[in-house]
Length: 146
Image (cartoon, rainbow, N blue to C red; front, side, top):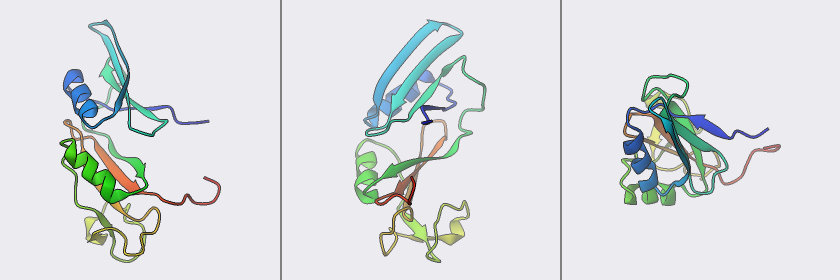
């Protein structure tokens, strides 16, 4: 099994489509069936998993998705690229105690990438126009079995 797509709730399909295209994401599909069904599929560069958004999809409040992880091999380069494309990306952070800063508590976060540049330990975040949150996670070596 492979995760194919994640539904992202948005308020404005066209605005969201332009936001993701502006980040350099590939537009895979834009199906306008009628006023009640419009679906757009976008895929981040290098990803095999896409996002869907539109009208007539399973209901969820726009901006209610938090913590969709985007694995990157170089957190600094990925952050710079997103900034160049107009995204408002947080500063890079890691866990002050040497663990994984994926916890929602910002009190555990320390500025900058993980000092040892361990895989899974450096992060940055950005939101889409509706407030759906993406987490960049530096992943250079996958855990065994993954």
